[in-house]
Length: 95
Image 1 (cartoon, rainbow, N blue to C red):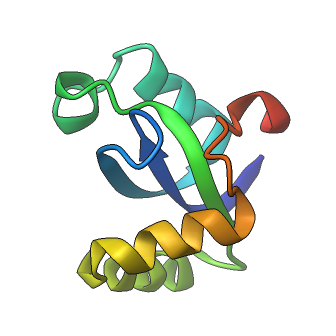
Image 2 (cartoon, one colour):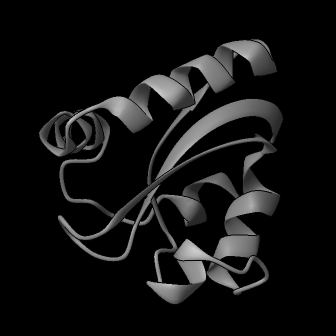
Image 3 (cartoon, rainbow, N blue to C red):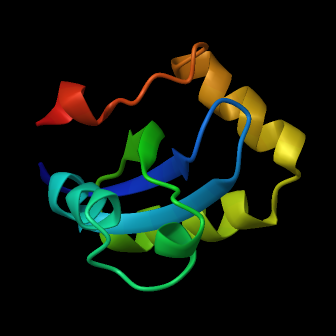
């Protein structure tokens, strides 16, 4: 899945959220899930892919990521629940 994407990870239902951007969603989520990336997601065990959105180019994806990072938590939850109301881990559906 080599395409610019914005994504949200969570550690559980309504849990801690992480917003990221990547050009390779499968590889990046794999890195989060396997602790290959030091920092926030490893420390708080945030590795379930609960939402993602593909973009035509990286500048558009980065703009969207920056916007979502500024959103209130309730807006992020609403965004997740429009695509994934049960907060299931979507990683198995993209590999």
